[in-house]
Amino acid sequence: MRLTIVGCSGSYPGPDSPASCYLVEHDGHSIVLDLGNGAFGALQKHTDVYDVDAVVLSHLHADHCIDLTSYYVFRRYHPDGHAPVIPVIGPTGSADRLARAYDLPPEEGMHGEFEFRDHVEVTEIGPFRITTALMNHPVPCYASRVEAGGRSLVFSGDTGESDALVELSRGADLALYEASFLSRYENLPPNLHMTATQAAEHANRAGVGRLVLTHLVPWTPSDETLAEAAPVFEGDLALATQGLVVDL
Image (cartoon, rainbow, N blue to C red):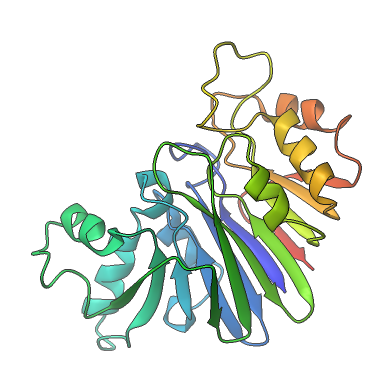
């Protein structure tokens, strides 16, 4: 599999990256994990968006889903014609949430462009097997384990500390974990985001081979995020950056 970081900025787009979006490719097929603020524009640099097989939304906060409205415009109004319907896998209510975001009648919504499906434990899209687990976040949020070609990656979505994330990630080749906070921050809510230390600890417990820290909030210095996780994680460690490509 090949992972491309399309957007890795946490909570809102930053000066160097759109919000959450990750392109996963294998054997001529591709899926997109999240489409946050500004991500659809950047996605077009990395793939022909007509060729995407499915979109998987971790949750319905704007920095993870709102650019599906832009994808809707592309698929509906492109002069080359109305693109075929593709699956969008997300939390219950995704279709209505995105219809409201684009001021569409809910009964019409985006159903002519997307087949909205609720998250289930296991979904197969082309060569990809996608296993999900509910995370520790104020709204329903799902981490996804994506497997193809004998390789695996786990995207945490947004979460505080979570035993379910560790279990989902057991033995994965790559963990793409959010690390929005630093341990020096005070009064951190327990069910919102992880610190860099917590992300590294979760990856160690899961026995993953590589860890890429993402959802990097622009007000947090990236060098501090990396410096906090480095003494903790026992494997290969990197920070997500817009355009980073990782071959598994």
